[in-house]
Image 1: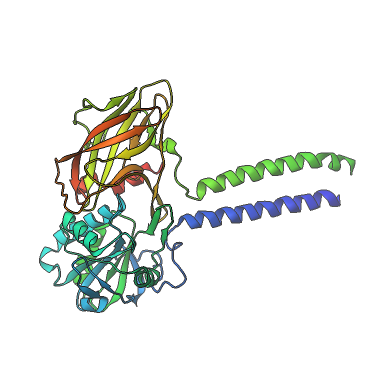
Image 2: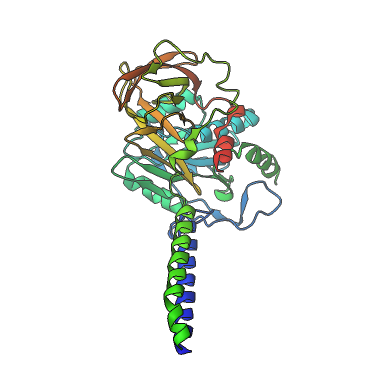
Length: 217
Length: 198
């Protein structure tokens, strides 16, 4: 009688182990937040508040600073945007599908707040490809899209700190593979991260949220 | 005791099979690149984006391989090209290289979305099974061409792409530029990527 019981225990044990391995692997693929490094200073928002279409950070956290060069060679710091809302996302110019889609969303929001662009709201893209994205490429890319954003580039050393702080996992392999977390943040005029949008296709959510949030006193 | 002892091999076998099945389940959930079969399709109703375009040109066929509905997007630094490739033949073939003679470096890539990670990786070849239609599309395979700094494209322009086939021969394709800078929201690839999930 002892033997089978032992066997059953082994079986159950391996089941539990396998299941644990399974769920671990699943998370690596990345549900929201799973791709954040421990050094991220922008935590994953909890459940949606019901007030906004985006994921709300409660309480809001100070947006991690950056000091980089834009597509026209201008030094650009987060603090330059004090008093304005900022939509901030991460992209690279050799990105075929997702990044053009993010740029397109930026353009849609720009269109909705035309009179306020660079007065009450600004758009910022930060490169996830320091080796590929030169100032010149960032400029050509921005001009092709006709965007009002500043496309910020920098050295790997400069950029890595910013990705980490914003919880943007970036993977680059020697075979030319590149991967990056697709997250967009809304920063308020006091420099606080208020909302997060995951993936693409959030332009309507952002427009509706901005209408609400810009009405705040 | 004897009875149980005899059952041990059976129990072990069940355990091994279960473990294998579970492990296979694991691999599926780990979010690796989707198998190429997801890009192999029988003819399906088309997006409005590509229907209505002329089906084929003079140079789009070679040895039973046919290219349909090529189009591209220009992002200021790159051209991304998409198309359907039909293997009408009885033998499998593969695209093993691409060239864009008047432009810059051309390469085959595959995009995937894994959780919130957007990934792009170079691929050596795209298999063309006999009788299959392979689709190079947003969120999947594409041809990427580096565009020289002094070259600009607008919608309606076209450029020449050459596909190199494993079984010999090359196909020249005139690829029209359909989108400059992200295109229109109606054809948003976000929605298309989502719908490709299953």
